[in-house]
Image (tube, rainbow, N blue to C red):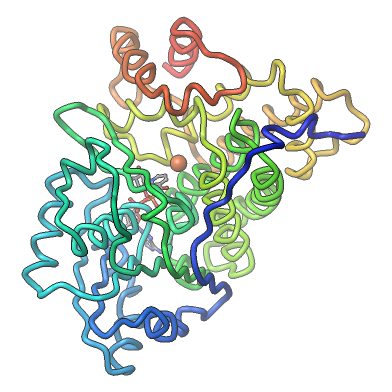
Length: 394
Ligand SMILES: NC(=O)c1ccc[n+]([C@@H]2O[C@H](COP(=O)([O-])OP(=O)(O)OC[C@H]3O[C@@H](n4cnc5c(N)ncnc54)[C@H](O)[C@@H]3O)[C@@H](O)[C@H]2O)c1
Ligand SMILES: [Fe+2]
């Protein structure tokens, strides 16, 4: 039986890949090789305070210095950076004399800034032009991405996301020229991730895999990487949350998050991410958490019409669904997503965030603008459907 149902878009699929990808415990030791391969002599490391405090910038810096390279560190990227933060970091990078390779060490926040600075340091283009969707004409400086959360998969995607406070929106800059040249997936760098961030960023990664697998842009590549990402993440997220120092669980999470990013690079996220956008843009709820809260509710909506895919995803999650009809298997999967959130301490309550019924119309307005993602939802979602979903989260 073909559990997945018909392959989507069989005639046209493209996969953007990062350059050299090195994975495994201790793989950060390969950083000087990757930088050397890219011709780097002056390296700009972009990171953030939490990552620096966890000591995760020290070893990479030492390795590069020991290899005879000049290193500048900018470690004040805030979580979910705004336009003004990117501008400030760009000014600091220029003041430090530029660089010839940019290394992003951190979660999506630091990696996205690293990707943008690499472009801005290499050509006369402003951030406002990039946010206004001006095409990036040339590749930026070469980049190496070192994720320290198992979440966004930014190390595998052509995207970089910036918060525009005036518009209460997060804007994605998307270009193949943002694809990283090197990636280091070292699970030892994620051992210090606190449980709550492990949970929310891990659920973001799971959301990427699930959404891209069911997206209208889904294809042969997202079929392959999506199911494997679901298997890896569902099989390790509780362990990573409860026992943060479990290298095996952290390794599976990091690989699963990377595969989730690969899925974004070939397919697209859908309504979960669209409905999460105004929660981040207006109410500053962290990206991973807003997606995690929405995921089971949107999946309940999406099940109708995508039953064979839900059956395959339930099996990938390790649920005992072999003898079940696809719809029943899909219901099992949705129950499992609710249970996963509960086990990870993720409470789907917008009221806790100060959001009330009066705010729902504004949330729907914000989500409805994200047609880039909504158009890919497997089941068309109307404004009243969005209303109903947000109201269930109150
Ligand atoms: N480019 C993409 O494809 C893409 C996709 C999805 C989301 N995003 C963006 O990525 C950002 C979110 O990234 P994120 O969810 O990875 O979180 P994050 O980068 O904001 O990090 C969250 C917090 O975790 C801390 N942290 C990170 N790694 C740590 C570690 N190993 N030990 C201790 N603390 C650590 C950071 O200091 C920070 O305080 C958002 O701006 C979101 O819009 C980008
Ligand atoms: Fe995401």
